[in-house]
Image (cartoon, rainbow, N blue to C red; front, side, top):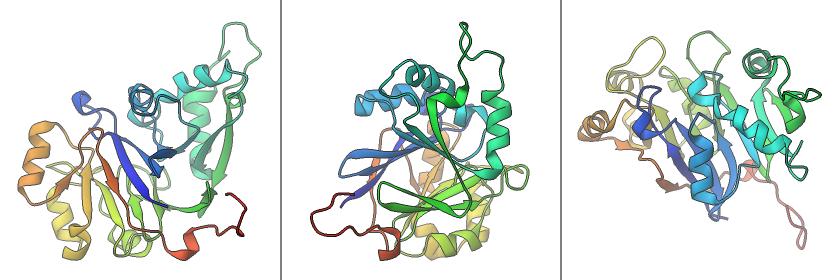
Length: 258
């Protein structure tokens, strides 16, 4: 089993040329799980895989991370083979925000009779969830209000922070070496996002060596981060991941497929 992390987009909300920050966990080149779904994410997913996502994890509900879910609703609800089959994983604390922001609008379709959640298989979680034979850890990050944003990890393979200020203790636990760490970072930080100076103040050299930075403010900013010695994600780039630890994989008996 070879896992990869593909960045469909890696830009901050105002960096439209880089695409909305979103990534796909792949297994042997096949998409397993989409992380976030901004306004242009479905187009990028279709261009890459010639198919819609079958599973989505939502880090938080800012529109540059969830605006594409409305379009995914329409593409899924009106396809009988897909309706109710797309898994949507979200921390339980986010479900009221998702309901308020996306699902509560009167009459999802003009004809009536349709609920937003009819298109999806909502899977609320807290510590994490099983998907496609892998255990995904879910952990709180620091972005606006407490318990409003969450990261994702497969122990030993990767962690994806979502939007966050530095969280060194969480990443020491959920992303020990040799896991790749995809981290929110702009050239200048602010109360909701990490800046490169924040990374250098808060993280160890060993952690920073495994960083791949995304959610930055444009090509020039990406070049400036790279000049500081960091690996910077590019739209469409896929990175090979280390193997997960044994406890993060579901081992099936011989002859039984996951």
